[in-house]
Length: 274
Ligand SMILES: C[S@@+](CC[C@H](N)C(=O)[O-])C[C@H]1O[C@@H](n2cnc3c(N)ncnc32)[C@H](O)[C@@H]1O
Image (cartoon, rainbow, N blue to C red; front, side, top):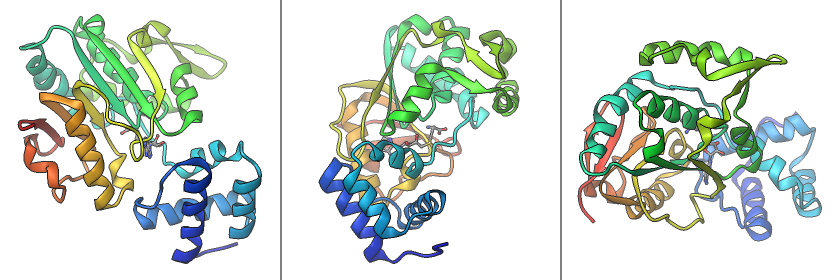
């Protein structure tokens, strides 16, 4: 079993992926990137050379590789306090100016965050006022998000979060059980468009009232965080909101002075300057 990799080996991987597939991992945080590559080697019984050969010779392997490389861990109503803040402060703030508004979930993973958003909006009577774009770099995880079907075991933590969010019902109202799976009502995704989008090389979108990019930039180094924040700035209306993960920080980013902090604990920012 390989227990360590040097920078030169990792560089060979990133350069090959960039050259052959256009994904740029050069500015991902080194320690977590290394851990994921080591895991891929271990799971596949590969050496660094056989991994490089597989990437070079098997064009379809890149999707599997990306799915293993990215960390897709997520939950419904993750950080319930954040979702209460959205319901009680952020969404009412957006509604003061717009009855119809747009949300971008960047790095949506398997869609739990999007389902949570629409459950919350539905309970506020607002689902049809909002159009949502949900993106991720990982096509396999986007397929899971579109299916809105989750292992029943995962529902325990989701239900606990929903209770702490103080939702109106039980989470069970929104899904049915089928063969050990929780299948969410497809109506919950009727205002959502799932798309593949890479935050590193992809263009900025036009334009949103709220962007959620939670627990994604933690895997980027400061240079990349800077670039991505610039894209989010360009994709937000003036006075639009940006939410990042509670353990993340934008403090070092050049563009941070174009935002004010709305809530320090839940890491919600508001764009105040073009
Ligand atoms: C830990 S999950 C976060 C899911 C959700 N936002 C949350 O907070 O629970 C991180 C997601 O970011 C995605 N991701 C990583 N790099 C990305 C990139 N360059 N562009 C778009 N998505 C990316 C991963 O595929 C993964 O699904």
